[in-house]
Image 1 (cartoon, rainbow, N blue to C red):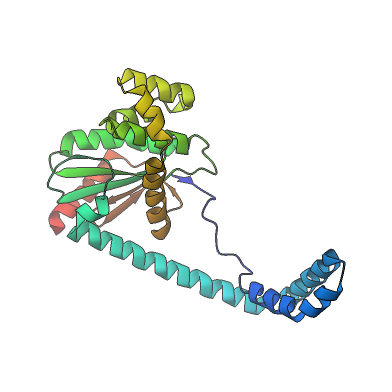
Image 2 (cartoon, helix red, strand yellow; image 1 turned 90 degrees about the vertical axis):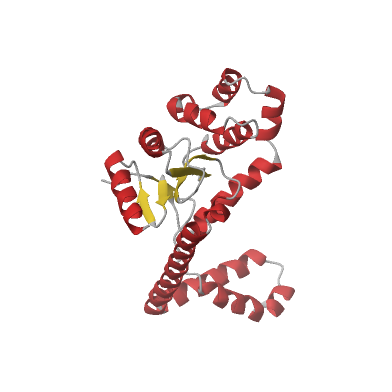
Length: 263
């Protein structure tokens, strides 16, 4: 069974998105009245009632608009994901960018992980990924991309920034593993403790995790995740294969076999 953390961050289409146009028309039509009125709240109430009446009078049109919007959004997401997978096959270096990597240097088979340090399913998958890379790290390149679900995991973003700061000192993977292995302790004390255990330069570490560079790196990953329609973690792309949730080693190995045959 696929299990993953799902974020309410990326909300479903607003059911009444098109009503905004009607509201705008009403506002424009009411400008002269508003100019003469000292009671803005009364006008707001009147507009609200007019909008609600439009909704009551046109339920079918609203539902049709919602379905059209949803279909359009799904189509854009599907196209973005197809383009992403195509780029991953043809030019993996551009897809990887500056994200942390380990394993094979050839990048013929690339495993991209979108993950959240506070997600329990990501922690479960971490153990599987470690086992997988121990067996296939000579042919698979692992890349980590941040997808902190901040609306449900308050420590996800601070942890991601700390990991980015560790990356600046060449210790991303060690720091990343420590975060997952000690997930129940996530917090400032742990971030500092891991930095000290890894003998990181504390002053640089503290500076880097609060830097605009860390925010930019994480922000780019979040933007990509949104374009791909990712709303939960973890998600994995192994060349053209997509896997989600707390995956098992057998699932990864089966995907790797399919990828190897395709190549």
